[in-house]
Length: 198
Image 1 (cartoon, rainbow, N blue to C red):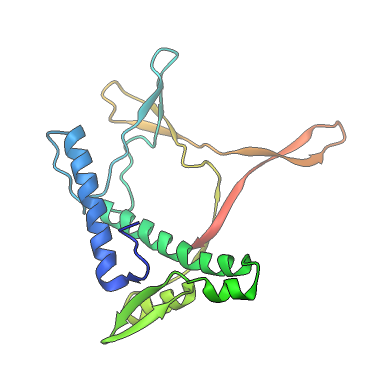
Image 2: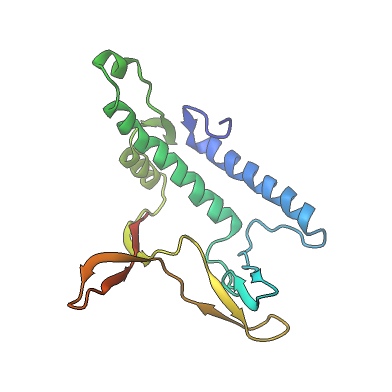
Protein backbone atom coordinates (compact mmCIF):
# COMPACT_ATOMS: atom_id res chain seq x y z
CA UNK A 1 0.00 0.00 0.00
CA UNK A 2 1.20 3.52 -0.70
CA UNK A 3 0.33 4.53 2.89
CA UNK A 4 2.58 1.80 4.34
CA UNK A 5 5.64 1.67 2.07
CA UNK A 6 8.61 -0.58 2.70
CA UNK A 7 10.72 0.73 4.31
CA UNK A 8 8.29 2.71 6.47
CA UNK A 9 9.87 5.98 7.65
CA UNK A 10 8.08 6.36 10.97
CA UNK A 11 8.79 10.05 11.63
CA UNK A 12 7.28 11.18 8.30
CA UNK A 13 5.08 8.33 7.03
CA UNK A 14 3.17 7.77 10.28
CA UNK A 15 1.63 11.27 10.63
CA UNK A 16 0.99 11.40 6.86
CA UNK A 17 -0.86 8.03 6.86
CA UNK A 18 -2.98 9.03 9.88
CA UNK A 19 -3.86 12.39 8.30
CA UNK A 20 -4.78 10.70 5.01
CA UNK A 21 -7.24 8.40 6.81
CA UNK A 22 -8.65 11.33 8.81
CA UNK A 23 -9.24 13.22 5.55
CA UNK A 24 -11.04 10.17 4.16
CA UNK A 25 -13.23 9.98 7.28
CA UNK A 26 -13.95 13.71 7.06
CA UNK A 27 -15.05 13.40 3.42
CA UNK A 28 -17.20 10.37 4.22
CA UNK A 29 -18.74 12.15 7.22
CA UNK A 30 -19.53 15.31 5.22
CA UNK A 31 -21.29 13.20 2.58
CA UNK A 32 -23.47 11.53 5.25
CA UNK A 33 -24.01 14.44 7.68
CA UNK A 34 -24.17 17.69 5.77
CA UNK A 35 -24.72 19.71 8.95
CA UNK A 36 -22.10 18.20 11.27
CA UNK A 37 -18.44 19.09 10.82
CA UNK A 38 -16.03 16.18 11.40
CA UNK A 39 -13.73 16.75 14.38
CA UNK A 40 -10.76 14.32 14.41
CA UNK A 41 -10.11 15.06 18.09
CA UNK A 42 -13.69 14.46 19.25
CA UNK A 43 -14.78 11.31 21.04
CA UNK A 44 -17.26 9.46 18.81
CA UNK A 45 -20.76 8.80 20.11
CA UNK A 46 -22.30 5.40 19.39
CA UNK A 47 -25.48 5.67 17.32
CA UNK A 48 -27.70 2.60 17.91
CA UNK A 49 -29.24 0.88 14.85
CA UNK A 50 -32.59 -0.96 15.05
CA UNK A 51 -32.46 -4.78 15.02
CA UNK A 52 -35.94 -5.08 13.50
CA UNK A 53 -38.37 -2.14 13.73
CA UNK A 54 -41.41 -4.37 13.23
CA UNK A 55 -40.70 -7.38 15.46
CA UNK A 56 -38.47 -5.77 18.10
CA UNK A 57 -39.10 -2.01 17.93
CA UNK A 58 -37.07 -1.06 21.03
CA UNK A 59 -34.09 -3.41 20.54
CA UNK A 60 -31.02 -1.89 18.90
CA UNK A 61 -27.51 -2.89 17.88
CA UNK A 62 -24.97 -0.67 19.61
CA UNK A 63 -24.07 0.69 23.01
CA UNK A 64 -26.89 3.16 23.67
CA UNK A 65 -25.22 6.41 22.73
CA UNK A 66 -22.08 5.67 24.75
CA UNK A 67 -19.18 8.09 24.35
CA UNK A 68 -16.05 6.48 22.91
CA UNK A 69 -12.89 6.16 25.00
CA UNK A 70 -10.58 7.26 22.15
CA UNK A 71 -10.82 10.13 19.67
CA UNK A 72 -11.03 9.45 15.92
CA UNK A 73 -7.33 10.38 15.64
CA UNK A 74 -6.31 8.06 18.50
CA UNK A 75 -8.24 5.15 17.01
CA UNK A 76 -6.50 5.58 13.65
CA UNK A 77 -3.09 5.89 15.34
CA UNK A 78 -3.77 2.68 17.30
CA UNK A 79 -4.95 0.89 14.17
CA UNK A 80 -1.85 1.93 12.22
CA UNK A 81 0.46 0.88 15.07
CA UNK A 82 -1.26 -2.53 15.14
CA UNK A 83 -0.73 -2.90 11.38
CA UNK A 84 2.95 -1.99 11.71
CA UNK A 85 3.51 -4.40 14.61
CA UNK A 86 1.75 -7.18 12.67
CA UNK A 87 3.90 -6.52 9.61
CA UNK A 88 7.04 -6.75 11.77
CA UNK A 89 5.76 -9.92 13.45
CA UNK A 90 5.13 -11.44 10.02
CA UNK A 91 8.85 -11.16 9.23
CA UNK A 92 9.52 -14.11 11.54
CA UNK A 93 6.71 -16.16 10.00
CA UNK A 94 7.91 -15.52 6.46
CA UNK A 95 11.43 -16.61 7.40
CA UNK A 96 10.10 -19.72 9.16
CA UNK A 97 8.20 -20.91 6.10
CA UNK A 98 10.92 -20.26 3.49
CA UNK A 99 11.81 -23.62 1.97
CA UNK A 100 15.57 -23.17 1.70
CA UNK A 101 18.38 -21.07 3.12
CA UNK A 102 18.82 -19.36 -0.29
CA UNK A 103 15.16 -18.26 -0.11
CA UNK A 104 15.78 -16.87 3.37
CA UNK A 105 18.76 -14.87 2.09
CA UNK A 106 16.71 -13.46 -0.81
CA UNK A 107 13.66 -12.63 1.31
CA UNK A 108 13.58 -8.97 2.30
CA UNK A 109 12.09 -8.22 5.72
CA UNK A 110 9.61 -5.37 6.17
CA UNK A 111 11.42 -2.57 7.99
CA UNK A 112 10.52 0.56 9.91
CA UNK A 113 13.10 3.33 10.07
CA UNK A 114 12.85 5.44 13.23
CA UNK A 115 14.94 8.57 13.61
CA UNK A 116 16.01 9.25 17.21
CA UNK A 117 18.45 12.13 17.91
CA UNK A 118 19.49 12.39 14.22
CA UNK A 119 20.29 8.66 14.18
CA UNK A 120 18.17 6.18 12.20
CA UNK A 121 17.32 2.84 13.76
CA UNK A 122 16.14 0.12 11.37
CA UNK A 123 13.51 -2.06 13.04
CA UNK A 124 12.61 -5.47 11.61
CA UNK A 125 11.16 -6.96 14.81
CA UNK A 126 8.34 -5.71 17.05
CA UNK A 127 10.57 -5.36 20.15
CA UNK A 128 13.00 -3.14 18.21
CA UNK A 129 10.15 -0.86 17.15
CA UNK A 130 8.72 -0.63 20.69
CA UNK A 131 12.20 0.15 22.02
CA UNK A 132 12.57 2.94 19.44
CA UNK A 133 9.20 4.40 20.45
CA UNK A 134 10.45 4.53 24.06
CA UNK A 135 13.58 6.34 22.92
CA UNK A 136 11.38 8.89 21.10
CA UNK A 137 9.77 9.69 24.46
CA UNK A 138 6.58 7.64 24.23
CA UNK A 139 5.48 5.90 27.41
CA UNK A 140 5.03 2.22 26.55
CA UNK A 141 3.24 -0.20 28.85
CA UNK A 142 1.77 -3.66 28.39
CA UNK A 143 -1.28 -4.97 30.26
CA UNK A 144 -2.81 -8.45 29.94
CA UNK A 145 -6.54 -8.22 29.28
CA UNK A 146 -9.31 -10.83 29.24
CA UNK A 147 -12.87 -10.15 28.12
CA UNK A 148 -15.96 -12.17 27.32
CA UNK A 149 -16.05 -12.57 23.54
CA UNK A 150 -18.77 -10.62 21.75
CA UNK A 151 -16.97 -9.84 18.46
CA UNK A 152 -17.85 -6.16 18.91
CA UNK A 153 -21.59 -6.84 19.03
CA UNK A 154 -23.55 -4.68 21.44
CA UNK A 155 -27.27 -4.68 22.16
CA UNK A 156 -29.31 -2.04 23.93
CA UNK A 157 -32.95 -1.23 24.66
CA UNK A 158 -34.47 2.22 24.21
CA UNK A 159 -36.00 3.33 27.53
CA UNK A 160 -37.82 6.44 26.27
CA UNK A 161 -39.36 7.74 23.04
CA UNK A 162 -36.70 10.44 22.57
CA UNK A 163 -33.83 7.94 22.64
CA UNK A 164 -32.03 9.73 25.46
CA UNK A 165 -32.03 6.80 27.90
CA UNK A 166 -30.74 3.34 27.00
CA UNK A 167 -30.10 0.09 28.86
CA UNK A 168 -27.23 -2.01 27.59
CA UNK A 169 -27.62 -5.80 27.40
CA UNK A 170 -24.51 -7.88 28.16
CA UNK A 171 -23.73 -10.10 25.16
CA UNK A 172 -21.27 -12.98 25.00
CA UNK A 173 -20.49 -16.04 22.91
CA UNK A 174 -21.19 -19.28 24.79
CA UNK A 175 -19.67 -22.64 23.81
CA UNK A 176 -19.95 -26.26 24.95
CA UNK A 177 -17.16 -27.14 27.37
CA UNK A 178 -17.04 -30.87 26.67
CA UNK A 179 -17.99 -31.64 30.29
CA UNK A 180 -21.33 -33.09 31.32
CA UNK A 181 -23.05 -33.50 34.66
CA UNK A 182 -24.45 -36.82 35.91
CA UNK A 183 -27.64 -36.25 33.88
CA UNK A 184 -25.76 -35.75 30.62
CA UNK A 185 -26.30 -31.99 30.47
CA UNK A 186 -23.40 -30.20 28.80
CA UNK A 187 -21.67 -27.48 30.80
CA UNK A 188 -21.65 -24.23 28.81
CA UNK A 189 -18.97 -21.58 29.27
CA UNK A 190 -18.57 -18.01 28.04
CA UNK A 191 -15.81 -17.82 25.44
CA UNK A 192 -12.96 -15.61 26.68
CA UNK A 193 -10.93 -13.36 24.41
CA UNK A 194 -7.55 -12.35 25.73
CA UNK A 195 -4.51 -10.45 24.67
CA UNK A 196 -1.92 -7.89 25.60
CA UNK A 197 -2.85 -4.22 25.53
CA UNK A 198 0.22 -2.25 24.41
